[in-house]
Length: 79
Image 1: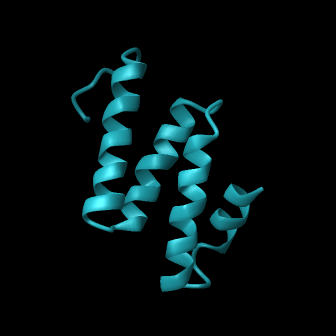
Image 2: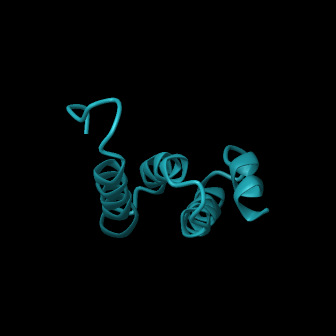
């Protein structure tokens, strides 16, 4: 991911970040890293609501682990 050009290749970046987020979310159950990856995906593709649904789920899981740390993000994604 770091070797990708800064400009261009948006579809490739989207696919790579999405896949990384899925690995963190489903295989490693590292919800914080998954949320960071899907935040990047949501910024690359802001018109697709599925990223916000996934982020809402992730922040919900993170709230269970640490109720005070992810409140703002959870509220933002549930709106």
